[in-house]
Image (cartoon, rainbow, N blue to C red):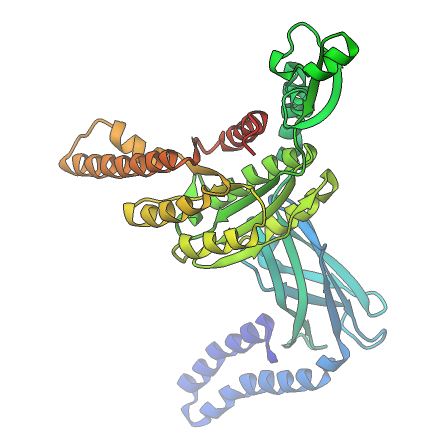
Length: 438
């Protein structure tokens, strides 16, 4: 593509007053006023012919493979042209992806030395997902600075934006430290489980039901069986990424709140020796991973979570949960993050959940709707305020009814504030594990 520079446009415009003056003072020679614009046009044509051909300019875009949400990384664009006779400076521009923010609208200049140069553009990551940089442009001036020659470049560069795991590691370390002080992790490992660990001499404070009377008679001393918590439990995180989960809470989509809570709980579960899988769905299943185990597998869980997209489709609980149940070959703990605002969608979810709780342990996590609660608690000033408060109260009543029905089915429910959902979920998981319900 070839088009005039700002200098060429301003130079051509500068001749307009002269042409007008000639037309007024010498109407018979009005055509003389066109000499200046014609000269600029001729110069632009010559400049376009002298400008470096697009085929002699090559450029490439390089990005890191991954980045965390809120992190700033560099997109490096390298330009290569002829060592002699080429432009000293080229300008580049990158097509912005909605998941990232580009400084100066993705524009920068590259100084070429011996025909080579590179520039790093800061890229600020805003949301999870995969940011694609499919197109960028390179342009350079002709030797007369009257025209731009521009080249459109295709790129396969992509940046996988992962959830930020720094809070996971910090909060996870605090959770382990707090539980270690209370002796909880020790209890989880030994003494309160279902798998036989060792035969030990009975001590004061031990459960009398653990006494092995046959071994005690043989050794002529009381002995008790000591158990440890069963490892390799299957924990499946099912995240609803439908329309309602994509709505923001305090500026952050609900699904991102769910992903953060899932990562923290998944990190703790892997540390405790359980196996973890991820299932994401909206109108149909989107992600169905296999089970992973070991703390070293946490980055894989993080990469899977980055693939959970924001959807505008309605959630199909029947299809998603039936597909999930068909994949599970043994009893598992299913942690489902979801949101509902009407009894119709809640009824579909309850029916699907009823089939799951027959075989599996189901834990449902929802965020409290603080916006509705504030409408109910706010003192009304106008008739519209009263209407909003009555409507909000009705929605909250329907929500409570649906959660109560789930509890009656045997599902465990966590309804939490958005900023405490991760801690509440970890506490719920550890409590269910300690009670040997898994």
